[in-house]
Length: 124
Image (cartoon, rainbow, N blue to C red; front, side):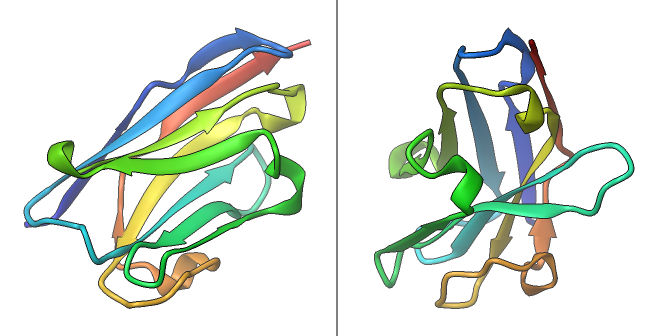
């Protein structure tokens, strides 16, 4: 059974930082494609960041480039999303996702496994 568990969300003022964690269990995700998505109330789930460890490629949506960084700690089988210079428009539930595909995936339908989500709220 593959499981992804997010944590690290919370309430932060604009300009602040948060680090989200996505702990994977059930198998080692060293070669998996991993992604972060977010969904604000009344909006569709949108792409935030994605990585293909096997290809060594990372992609970010334009609105977070230079502010967010996705990385992993292999020994912990955990992927992180470091979020700096947060803005109120970053407020959403953040989800991590995983796929055994050897590519960088920027669409939700490309992923097979999802976490339960963690709320990020940025106050102005």
